[in-house]
Image 1 (tube, rainbow, N blue to C red):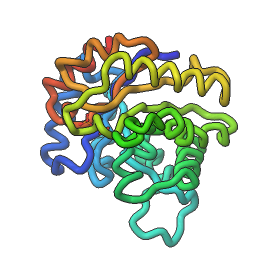
Image 2 (tube, rainbow, N blue to C red):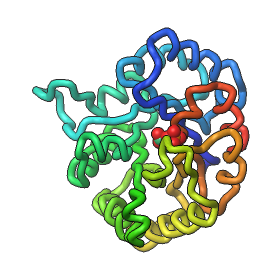
Image 3 (cartoon, rainbow, N blue to C red):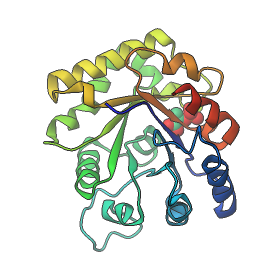
Image 4 (cartoon, helix red, strand yellow):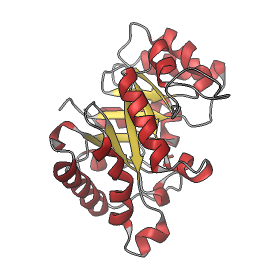
Length: 245
Ligand code: PEP
């Protein structure tokens, strides 16, 4: 497996100028201008950022991709081929905010995964339980249900991000024991259901910050991080990327 991977998820933040300024800071720094680092920027800024990142090592990621593969009458959608066309290396798929606000289900997410892989864009499938599901001790069943679509994918590279919903943007971080437990569970699930778990990177996401990144990234089976809020600050993001080595 390649080294650790850190992806900054800018969500619905920045403007054209601030996105380019943030990207310029990341490009100027060897800790962030690194093949193990990516930025998931708003769709409207991806093409300009792709131009800006040319020649650098930092990878461009989309935050979502269409479940429709072919060009056509799908107003508002961005296809995997379009992402590949401008140079996106990754795309997030099934972020909990999309599952929650846009009712994305496994059928749509499987189509998104397949479309991304077919276009040569590596999908990052986000999985994770809500607080109610954790408290009801249903979290492993929920995560296994979300992972199930991977068994439908014959081949192709993808990344998994474990993001407990209760830890995203809340400042609450899962304990290292909780992270280790679920990462081992996911690796084991992959081994049982899709084989070759050592080739699949499993990132942790949920209030990763400069202060807690080193401990999280040193936890067994954590192959990187998906970082929301802290990725909007180049100084914090660089510390996290450095912690990933
Ligand atoms: C995310 O957006 O995937 C995320 C983990 O956000 P935050 O780091 O802000 O919790």
